[in-house]
Image (cartoon, rainbow, N blue to C red; front, top):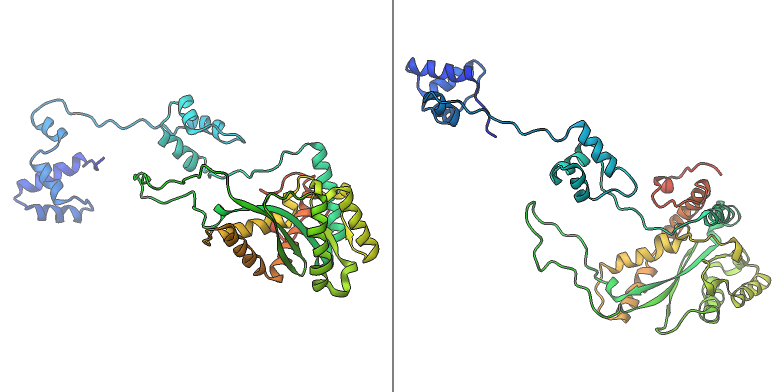
Length: 372
């Protein structure tokens, strides 16, 4: 709405015009009195241009300017707060139906009045009381018995993940357009009708660097026998001796609670290694359950591989495998140590939080966490 000129200013303009002042002189005269008026406004005043001026000049009822009602009242702000500021907030359309406010007003109330930000909730496992108790106890044991101090240098952690062809050169879900413009019709994310093409990899991180990735052939399921013959045996007879040489008796081995990891034949093989070369490992009952937030391969390793794959272009599964090996081999020992330090902090924090989820806790990356 244009700025309304006061009645006193209009009277001064007409008075100066009768005194034979030009438009420019009137403007300069008013500026001396700290009143800013443009030459166009002076012209409209003297020629009675405008609804209110023309009505007054013709001796008709003067129309009044109607200001829009204020919708962002304290009562409406409280209504929106009650519907939006909770774990499962209502959609803006639902808030509109319940408050009769416009979507624009609701947006202003949420972001300006309530000063709320839009955040994505982390997807996590559902935990019951037994899971929380297990996580609290076993994460504390894991930290105190195997990771505290310099012992993490001898820790070896292993996990499996699926890698897909579409992980390479992945298209982003977001795009940028000018305000008020629509997204071009061709800017869509196309989805193939066929099943995703991919394969399984086995990743291993140690306190002294990474071990080369293992690729699981297609149509092969990792059971206990395959896990022992094609993963554990090459790991303990070929790769770890290169990293630890005469210190194999100090090595601690960690994996999750997958069925192939806790099977009788797997445990029997690990017991043989324990008696022959002196390694230690987590027994089945001491492995934290539902704990990807306390597994380096889950909170760092595989996510890093897929993040880097999205920036590279591969047209075949063999190309994805080659890129994955290249990305994995470039992870430095310093990075592995930082990841293991984060592992320590996460274990301590899970125990301090009584087994609750910690993915949305900012203190994860702090060096000093409350002592257990």
